Length: 377
Image (cartoon, rainbow, N blue to C red; front, side):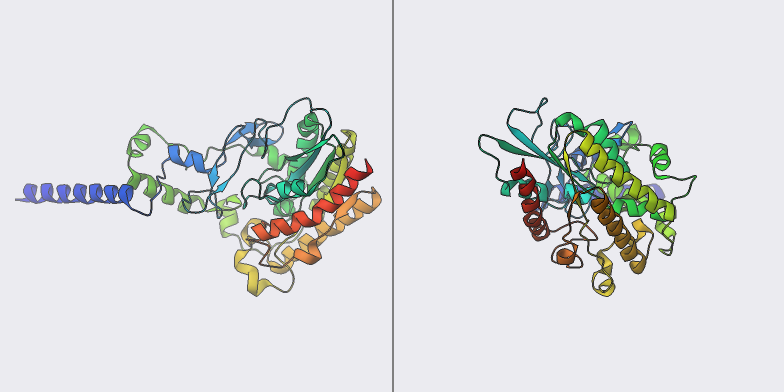
């Protein structure tokens, strides 16, 4: 009797699982297969790089969720990562004759992760630029999500120069702010970066052969995916460490961190000039301002910065002050649209990533400054 009941229970469970599997595969709304084989097409794939820590793998066209690095069958954002691991069209070496290359470099805000190719503000800026007679302009989006000013500096001197840019616009703040509370003489920005390893994303890689075998099931793949996300606490800024997930956002900005940011940005300007390009600094537009904590707080990644709203606004202000000082002291063109854009939810999806309207607005402000440099020769 007990055996018969047990067999019936097992058969019932198997039928339920099989029915659920079939429902997932046949749903008219199109439930997405969340297996690593499928997710690899909806996530940017990175490869290890000694100098930069990691870089985007060349020749990929991921369809990424506009909200986070996961599957979204309804409104995916499409990136083209070219033959050099940059966003946009392929880059030839040496640079073709009569070509003016305008590069942008920074983190995810410059990469413009929320917008499709052609709708990112680097591309939109290029659409407005008029080349001299018998010349062409090529935009180079050299930004990478997660990059701070130290990594962009390394990219300028270790990679970007090969493509012979004529103008390089650099913008940083948010990804550096993440280090502002943790910076000590024993935990400098470079040492921390060197100690990091490019860890395989468990969502995109099976743990073992059994995991792979079970992954033939859409149901298992869905349970696996959401379990991993819940356990490693993934946000738009990547996977938070247990410390970041549980530590209150009540910290202090370290003076050494501000000095490091200043050194990085000065070095970036000097390096851009050394490779024969014209540097342009841009203050980072952002959502957090002193007066909008109640309105915009839910869209701001306080846990990544480990700062409360007031402290985060102060950190952005410190970056602005440093950038303005550098622009003045080194005679660098400074683009400052913070007064127009900052704090406006119409322009931002979150703390620094622009909406389609935000990217268009930013391009409208950047293009005239770049055009003046081109016209001056």
